[in-house]
Image: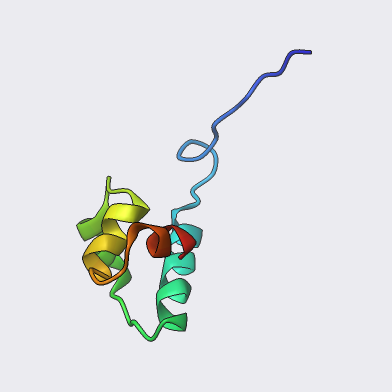
Length: 67
């Protein structure tokens, strides 16, 4: 079996608006209102675990993974 994988994100497809919307909705469900532009500047290049550890310092690693 052989396959050819294309990564079109950033070339033919720009998924960032969907990514921004998903994060904004995720935060809103938890009662957090974020400025999407500022949020993405502050979190660019960071893992979800790093971001959530800063936002929810009282949570343990297992709770952050569940989020």
